[in-house]
Amino acid sequence: MKGRIVIDMERCKGCGLCIIVCPKKQIEISDQLNKKGYYPASFKEESEQDLEKVKCTGCALCAITCPDVSIEVYRQDKDDEKDESEED
Ligand code: SF4
Ligand code: SF4
Image: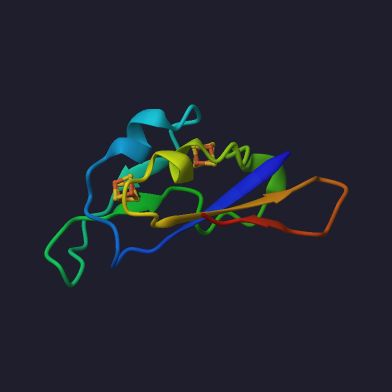
């Protein structure tokens, strides 16, 4: 199972909890300030097109942990083109 996350950078307060919990270490703090003046979290594999190289498993630990509900998780099987969305 492969995963991909979308972080709402304007909602994020840069607390770093998602970075701590990600078992694949695929989240980092951005060097760009958001409108609230925080450095938000950023998904390292944002622009990775090769599914074979993607390390995110779509485990959703980051989304569950985020106190600001700023992360959406999408999962994709290698053989399945269908995306599953998990929002909270
Ligand atoms: S879904 Fe899991 S593996 Fe992917 S970024 Fe979030 S915590 Fe990391
Ligand atoms: S847990 Fe949520 S608020 Fe905290 S850095 Fe991650 S996305 Fe931002």
